[in-house]
Image (cartoon, rainbow, N blue to C red; front, side):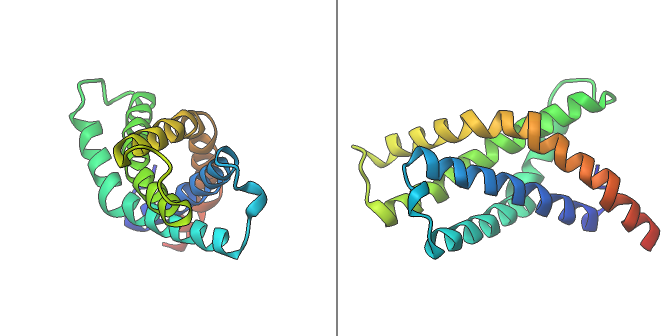
Length: 159
């Protein structure tokens, strides 16, 4: 998909924006906070987007690429590469962004669970349940389609 760093940045921004929006709404709904939407909630979403984008570009993205190309499968098949990369990205981002979610939930409401570890595992489970199918079935194809139709041609024409 992205062929250089500029394309990678644009693609990452698009993917993170979509995933953070949907996942933030999902977490607000499952935690009963959707009716308490305020400027603080919007600010948390912006901070969440920035954290997710930095993680994507600096940590999870590079690790996911390394892992994907170390896995034993036929890399000439684009679908396999996309599925492996998406899986690695979702696992990494869910693990990292669940820490962000745990921190914001603890700062907002205190820790309701018996332990920090069990609260973290519950957040990871809840987030993975939506993030994986969202990435594979909706956001991944949507962002790749938009990127290939609108962004890539404009970047190629600008060169």
